[in-house]
Image (cartoon, rainbow, N blue to C red; front, side):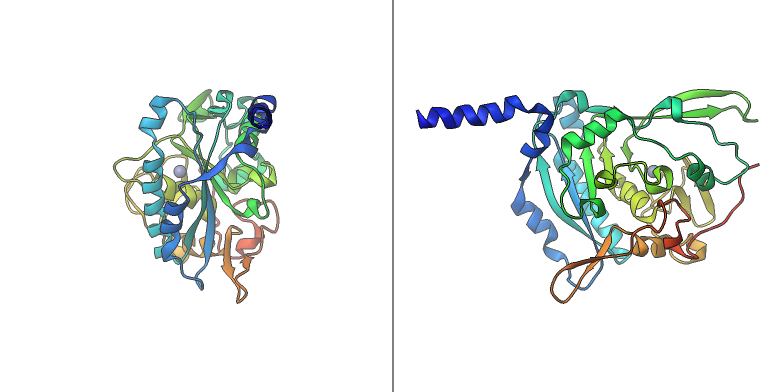
Length: 314
Ligand SMILES: [Zn+2]
């Protein structure tokens, strides 16, 4: 009788509260996580990362974007950021049931997006009209991520089957605009686009919808958006939505470089100033960098002079 009651209670916990399913997500593959973190050194800066992979994602997605593939990409990202002096600490891999209505999201409501006038540069335009999350995207993140102490300073890599980003595409003279929807391979929801429009506990979210079997650099690239708070730019190449060239981690290509100095657009310096970066003190406590002083746009006062000022295209 007692056993039946226990079985029934467990069953009811799962069935009665589907909206709180995130509470049921559990850490998996903990020995492997410990092995991945075995090379961390106490006196170097770190970033905490949690990887979320729902157990019931569709089979086709699981075979195209397997958890093992994402872990391979995480190992590449570890090397890329270690070279720039920052260690990635995998806090946990979490898995559990996800309501299938949250397998796929629109990143922002199309009706709130607006083309850039192009008199100001891309980052200034974004700060004027920060992108907003859809209510559905917010509910999806709530269904996956359970906030914890300092989860707002943690990066949350979330496997999602489809993440669609709307924007307006203009003709050459910028007169006629058409709404466009791009299916993203990974989306980093960075502060330079969103400011503080994402609820704080979830601001570290990055969605992963593709496994880069060849170069395995998608996770490193998306982490770069979040941690350096820059778009697609590298040395003399100014930021664009999509720039195909090799060399820099932040371009679409094969590059993994995180350059430094003004000629490197301050990428390495901005990485080390990131509010997601911490150090361990003598007691082993985590001491995080300063947070953004304002809303976290590209030229947030946190970055001091580590900002490139440039003109808009027109
Ligand atoms: Zn990108």
